[in-house]
Length: 459
Image (cartoon, rainbow, N blue to C red):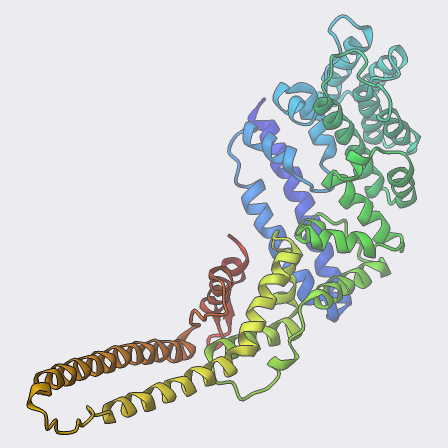
């Protein structure tokens, strides 16, 4: 593998990401209501470009990056590299045919010709390879891509054929494990879906996803996201799948690896629906609308709610974290509930402190009892012993109660003070819930107008 191949990969990936960003900019320009959303998605694309594209320094890094990537429009690069590089071939499930078969020989010759851009000669080799083995899906892929390079009339029947053949024993020639079979199946389906998506053949994608492919392929993230993409762009119902993506914490992948179309009326509707879906799944927080906040946790919860209500960027960033939606909602509910109960808990602590302070004063007024004068001198020693023991027990009791009350007052002082600076550990709170609330409080700066969502939702 040469540096030229590495440069080609970077260039192609960068071009695809740049194209997505440019389309998003146009979509945001058409509709102001989704401009903030498109900015967030473009930020994620920029991060992807710097970390994934510019970040790798070797072909091995590039291969690993390609294997994990969901970027639309680079499936042919995966096929190309996977067909000539053993490592990527194993990673994405491209299985070479036995050396002795004529189909394999023609395929390898075709690949070399394709590599050198002799597309007409490569076409003949791929046609010969497919003719000798109609189950050679690598050769069928090469045949499709070569025709595409030659700008021949696009016939997507070959893509449909590849998808359907993955449902049978197309690896009959190898001792394939279930893992290899699933990897290979998913790779070829994902390749075909990517090409069909680029060609706007959404109905073909939808029909094949729903009626042809196996359950494990339907759950393969790259395939599933392309199917949702096709549903959106063709105006079909996708609410169920959007809900699943949110629940699974995969929203960022859906939004970043989405094929946006500037003039597709369903794109703006989709972006608006994403925001609406997130909002509807957030826990209720009406009690945070009041302005007379006493405690830090109330003030920060109110600011957080305000940002989620009015700032689409914050809402989208919340949805983008891979933590499942149920965990995010649970954490938010814990935070909001703590804010809701804070005034009452503060009042309880203040009243209890006053009560304990009053009891301390009462204890100080307790005096030792007075005893009658014992006229019988034979009982004087016994009376003295009783008086001494009684006074000793009273003093001991007073000291114990005073110590307990002072300790309680100090603890209540700490709780009251922590309501002014953070969030205290209350008896009603578990260690986990207290930590959740404190994480929110410490990462929300309502004065500087900064929320560190990464620290709140990323473990």
